[in-house]
Each structure stands twice: as C-alpha cells, then as structure tokens.
Length: 392
Ligand SMILES: *Cc1c(COP(=O)(O)O)cnc(C)c1O
Image (cartoon, rainbow, N blue to C red; front, side):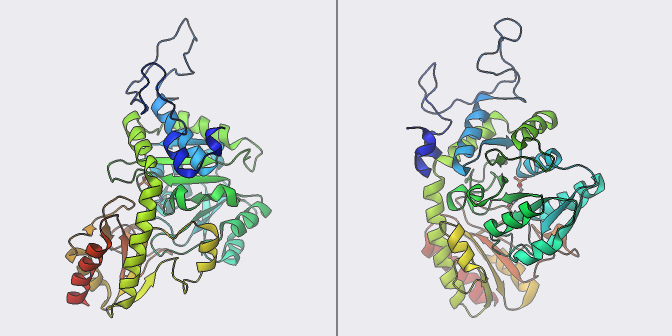
C-alpha cells in the first residue's frame, strides 16, 4: 500500500510526513536552516544543499500537496501570487497570449495586466462560466487558459473538463486556481487541468496565520514548446527564489491535516447562511454554487464534492448600504482574505477588487462577500440578521 492509495484525510495527514528518522518525531520538524553539511565536495545527504533550492520542511509540504491534488509534483511559494508569477514565467515568453477570467482574484488580474502585459504577454478576457466565451477569446498565440472556479467574488462556476478540451484543442495549457474549492472539494488535474495553483494562505493554511502559495503540475505535463512543465517550474522556483520559508511551510502542512473536517463544517455553515440570506427582504441576490438556480449548479455538482464556504450577496440600497453592513457585523470580522476558521465579511468593490475598478473586471457595487467560518451557524445567522435588519 502506498500513501497515494489512501483516502483524502489519510493523505493529508501522512503524505510526505514519515516520522523523523533520527528522533521519531511524528510531526516533520521545522528545518530552520539555510545550508547543509556536505560529506566531501558534492556529497549531499538526501539531496539538500541550500534552502532556496530545497528544504526538508518544504519538501514535506510539497509532497503532501502533490498527493492531495493528484499531481506529479508540487512547489511551495512565499505567496499565491509568487507561485502564479513563477509558473507564468516558466511557461510563457514575450509574444505569447493568455486567456484570463472576467471574474478573477483582483491580484491575479493585476499580475496579468500590469506585470505580464508590460513584459510582452497580452491577454483577452473570457467569461469562464461560458465555454463559448473561452473559445472566442483564443488567439493563434494563446499558450495558457487561466481559470478560477468558483470565481472570486461572484461564485461563478467554470466547467473544467470542457475548458480543458478547448484549451488543448488550441495547443494551450489549462491552469486552474483552486483556492476557493481547496483540494478537498475539487481536483482539477483529474478533470484535465495541466497546472493547479493555490493561495495556501486561504483554506489550505486555514487559520489566517500564514501567507503562502502552491503550484501543482499534472503527471507528464508538457509546455506548448514540448518541455517538461515540472522541470520548467522547478528551474524557475529555484531561479526566481520566491520559495516558502520553513516555518510557513510547516504552518500550511499543519493546516492541511484538518482540511477535510474544516471544509465539511465550512460547507455546513455556508448552507445555513445561504438559507437565511435568501429569506431576508433586504437581500436582492445570493450567489452560491449549491443553489439549484445557480446558472452552473449542475457543473458544480459534477466537479465539486460540496459547494464550499464562500458566499456572495447583494443588498437593497446600493454601495453605501453594502459598506455599512460590512462595518456592522460583530462575529463576521471585516477584512480581506478568506478560508480561515473565523468568518470574514468584505466589500469587494472597495476592498479586494478595488484595483479592478474601471476595468473590464469591475464587480457590482452592492456586493458583499462572506468567508463563512466554522463557528456555530446560529451565531453567524444572528450576526448577519442584526446588521441586515437595521440597514436594509
Ligand atoms: C488570495 C488569492 C490569491 C493570491 O494569493 P496570495 O497568497 O494572497 O498571494 C490568488 N487567487 C485567489 C483565488 C485568492 O483568493
């Protein structure tokens, strides 16, 4: 029996995490070290030479994430955006073109628009919930189709398998940002994705105490130029150097051990919150892939285990009311980010997505986004009720 034959939770707890060979410690140590003694020149013990190139705590995390996503290899980074930048530099060259979602994490769009574009990589915007929109955005020089699903902040759903077919038919790779679903709810590689990226800052870490990222490569994936994606990303991870530090890697690894139980509770609580929001007269729309009237509910039901802990909704009264609701909740903390045990509320138009105001990616001004935590659902509903009753 190899660890990859085990169920999700067993892999989360054991993949890459043998008891320490010298002490028997059941948790991988934090190898807070930069360099390693060599037994004669070039005589490396276990392949470790310098911690930018490889560090045992980071290796444990990388092996665990690769197992959870069904990848050939995973690479851990200092942030989600560091991982995104590294994989884009590894796979693209000036003159190439990428297809970018209309409803993406604001920082991802900024990377495409203000870092990649001046470097010479242009993009087109597609509504990834609509496969035909992706097809229409392709150009002869398209090398990557980038998809986020569920999307941020509108909780749209992209059909990963269908878009993989479209991308591959055009000679492009499919990269999926799986941050919102986490590897517990969705595994894009099994659906045809070539690369998966994560902000491990979110559900993977799960406790709002670390910033990190991961890139996972599908078995045998080749770049459009015929090179090994694993080798390209490994080379760029070491050459660009935006790696996860040992303590950050250790925190994410610890977070992953409870991912399955946390996600089940996030989903349970989100369902209760969605029910409440739908019944409140001050709420004009609720965005949640688990709702049967969500436009791509059937796709979500097919490719996700459950529907996640992220919920968005719109309120009567417009932008100012939305901003006030965010300021008036007490248990839901007003803040950016998501995926931690504590519930968060935010106003995308003025916060996470302020950088896309006035661009093709602008979001509705009366939208509120919730990251539903794992507190008691009744307390979360009571908190939203007191804010909405007063303000809408
Ligand atoms: C937060 C986030 C990112 C960026 O990750 P950082 O760790 O903040 O750099 C990318 N994609 C999504 C969907 C995110 O939520």
